[in-house]
Image (cartoon, rainbow, N blue to C red; front, side, top):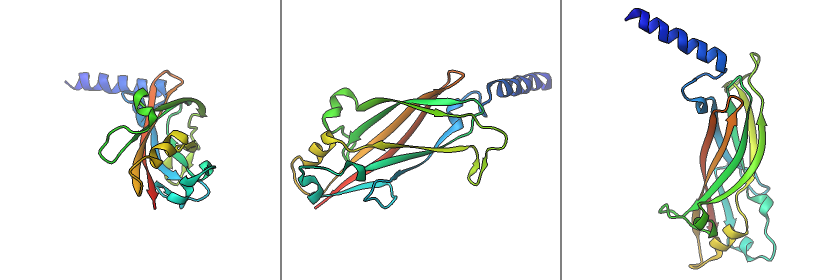
Length: 184
């Protein structure tokens, strides 16, 4: 029994040293979405996009005011990249909304490289590399949904999924949600 345990412990240590990740059985554990925050010009740094009815009147929209920054910490010694973003929009009951519901959300390709952690990458929140990526969550199709009847205050949710791989070929996935409010 003790020999079997020792063999398993040695095999796990070899996998950890060779792979560079902290958890060789779950490489996605090496990346953590620490915060989603609204960082546009009119934001307060919170987790909700607030749009006033007067801003929806058009003919131009302040898309720069409705930017979401995804902040994450990467803890793997192996470099990685994020290569796609999917944003699905739902109402308060979880039903898909906007014109994107027919195609399963709004998906687009990105290229975001994350360097591997060196031994001297220590930060106040723990070991790892802190990084961020900004996304424009509100576009014309979202505006059309927000302007659709019934008029008045509304809320929809944007579920954001970032996908990628580390250099060893293991998949990475980050998920978060932000609310989009319309006030009269």
